[in-house]
Length: 105
Image (cartoon, rainbow, N blue to C red; front, side, top):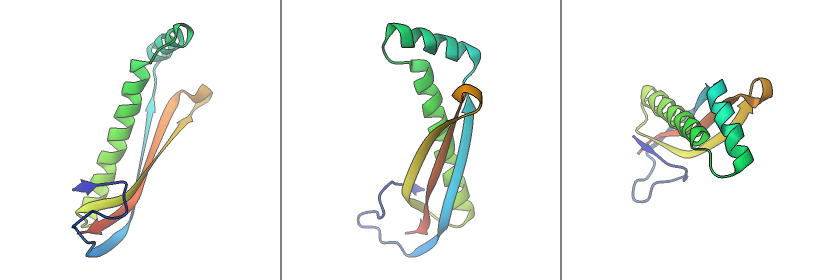
C-alpha cells in the first residue's frame, strides 16, 4: 500500500478513485510524561517523551488509514493530510486525524 501526501504518484496513474478515507487516533499523556515535560519546559530543550507520543499517534492514524483503504479495495492513498490537536482537560490528550483519497493505481 502506497501512502503519500501528493495528489499523484509519478509513473503510476490513478486507475480508479475509490473514495475518501479517514482515521482518528487519540492518545493520552500520563501524569509522569506531563511531569517530565514540565521539567523540560523549565530547563529548555526537546521533550523526547512527547515526541514519542506524537510519533505513536501519527503512526497509529496512518496504519488505520491504510487498513480502511485496503477494506475499500484500494492499493494506495493519495493527498494525505495529518491534523494534530490537543483535547481533554488541560489539553492532556493528543488527537491525530488522517484523511486522504483511496485509489487504485
